[in-house]
Length: 118
Image (cartoon, rainbow, N blue to C red; front, side, top):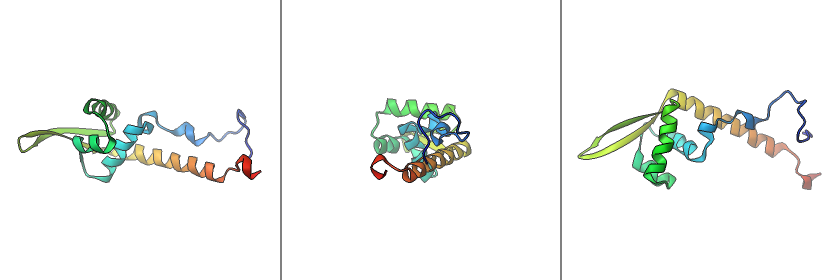
């Protein structure tokens, strides 16, 4: 591939243009990925796995919930209050689309000659 930077004549958009800013942000991508791996995930587990403060994690979960990508359930485990996060169907689809775009981006990088190869 020998496209030059700034060449707008190529009708095929670069894979990076399809990345979703809500999903792609590092913490939110982590939340969606962990939620995808489990039926539901406890807030404290996410906090420890992603090494975040409760307030920071809460803000990211709110963004995902507002976008309809996760559902938040509050309840109790014994006498302790708990918060669980579950991936919605829309969240699963958004995660799959993001991973697909990242795969396209990786494939582009892996098949492009570097200056050292020329």
